[in-house]
Image (cartoon, rainbow, N blue to C red):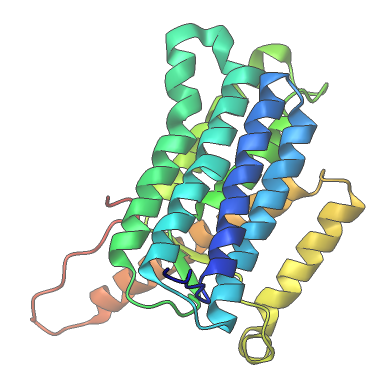
Length: 260
């Protein structure tokens, strides 16, 4: 009789599957229009998404299987769930076009995950991501829909338009190649190397809890803006450097931040 071999990868993989399980529960909550209940389980899924990678690196149990499993679970919890919420909250009233618009975050998020997997060269913590990570996209959509979509100061005829802009903008940022900062694993070495990112993460978390979620969308909007401003500044600097360069060498083709 063969013995069942339990490897170190079991624990991080179970944490990853808990991410998917929370995403499924979020879908069940959305099916009965419990938006805040769904948001709570998406937040728990995001916690498991952070923990699985951290545990895998701490236990030296990173693997190609773990990467693929993580992407599949993220596609549901942070792609399909926000898309279904958008459809339930508003876009089902726009008929066929509503289905297409609501599906944009799921389509863009899955594409971004696939691109990330084929470009992965190591299992070490990354300082930047190409394109906004899909969990961040889910946080943008949930925070805006829950706390700002039905803002009484926004005329009713504009509420759907603004939701569509947030949806399309989030999808665009995910498929872009704009650099976005990654929150590193909370280890003493990483804290010393990137104290600014840890401070930002702690402040953002504290502000979100203190405001009962209301501050999350402005925080995520700032996160998006930093990435966009960074690429604009770099583009301007590169163009100035090219103009000042009197060398007759052939210039390399400039890469667009939205090249797929």
